[in-house]
Image 1: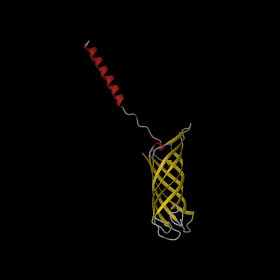
Image 2: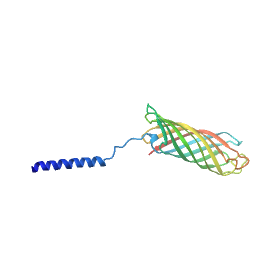
Image 3: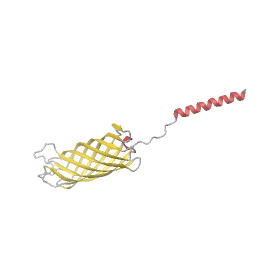
Length: 202
């Protein structure tokens, strides 16, 4: 009888321990696809003047640091590919290689429309947005008329994941700089070029 009681007690303790362990056990980690993660992007490129009101030639070397949070909107197709909308917030620094000014520092934001393949390995993206910043205007005819300068941009490219948390990026970028008519004349500058970069997910 004592042996039966002891076995019964051990069985109850075992069941209790199992239930407790199951209740507090953590779910095994799930690998997130790139568009399900926050992303930090670091990109650099080169832009050439392609138009605008300024008669001066410009060449610009931008460096862009961006944060893209995980998707806000998405649709997953039957094959597992996904169309995703995310936000993009960026700080931009530009060295003006050719032109009367020397540098431009600014901020910009845009939605990022991304199509991802079923494996989450590569994507095609497009972005359209704008922001503002400061340029060291020089008071030169045809140059930017004041330090406060607004930017409008469009970008498109491809991204390729080389690890679960790192991707390479390559794209084209169009940029417009002007002061929205705050000075007369308002010598707007249009430039077009390429960007290359790397993205870290977390």
